[in-house]
Amino acid sequence: MLVATIRLWLSKDQSVQKEGVTPAEAAYYIAEHQHNVGKNPVEVIGEPAEIKRSGIQEIKRLMGFLPNKKVKQLFATPTANVPETYEEAFELGGQIEMEDGELITHDLAKGD
Image (tube, rainbow, N blue to C red; front, side, top):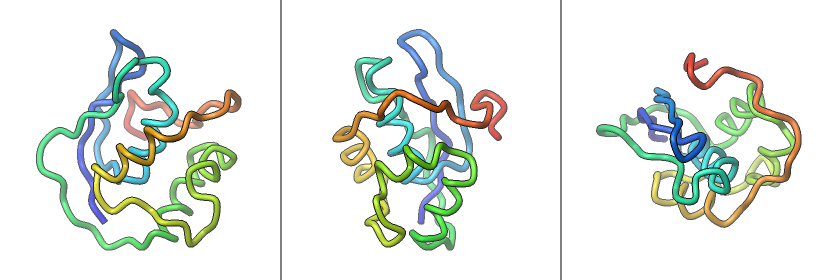
């Protein structure tokens, strides 16, 4: 699995930089923020690095700090196809618009 530093556009004029973002996490941010930005809200900065983490482990990790209902919109089952690349993340995230509801539970600006 890959991890990279990204710039996440929260609105048309506000962004944050976030480190250690996987393609699955990027897909979530794309689906969550695309309607606010009017374009792809995620830009990969620099060269991604490879880490050892399975798709199941990644979904569990995301459910630890993102709204479970919204993670399940992207990954309906624990064995769902988790994107391996950022290109796959852009495609998946761009196909889904998140329902309104619970906000994320960590401060993106702090990089939690």
